[in-house]
Image: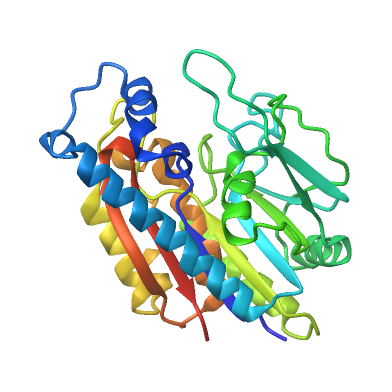
Length: 307
């Protein structure tokens, strides 16, 4: 059967900790970058309200996934030079076909290592292998990793996988297929290519008997530790979400064709939203929530697609 559920969310580190602790990581991320006046208006009370909305957003995604009861979950996110080494090799699209992959849920503290909490994701190996071969047959030049041997980071699998996964499936009991996109390191795949990847997945899996969901994580606009750290391009975020809500993801096909300071840094992770958008075609996304939170250093959003 075709992919029957699409999910997407932001995965910035502060999304996963108490708002009362946001300030430490916020200051570390912005360094000496002058901040917008809107950041000063984010009082502790407002931050706590944002925190409640974040938990509610994850709650909706979790409920949608539980109701759909998938046999497999395709996860799409970027590799921040964790599994791959950005200097030795950073593939545009990577598919993991090994038995399992793991990484840390806890955040690193700015002045030392945080407590470890290992998250292990089990792979739907047959489906992953089918996707890998099918994409090559459809002229996608992909990297395939058959064993979990992270080359970039001793922490293992990137947080775009290990932190959102427990929020939507606390028991980690759904087999996954991990697809890793290059969203940070030039040259990167075009928005058009990411949409095409989503469409290819739908075509490849149309005759499968399993119930399959797809989950993209990353973005929206942000530039952690970059020259625009703490700044959020709200008009860009709303334009992206508006196109998805209208069921017209192809409006975003030219998203990265011009060079802009806004598109640098973490804003490149919007690519991870384009893959499920392409997979769900003209289905209108439900934008569950959107919050331009400067103390999270990100435009934070949650969305789902149900045909």
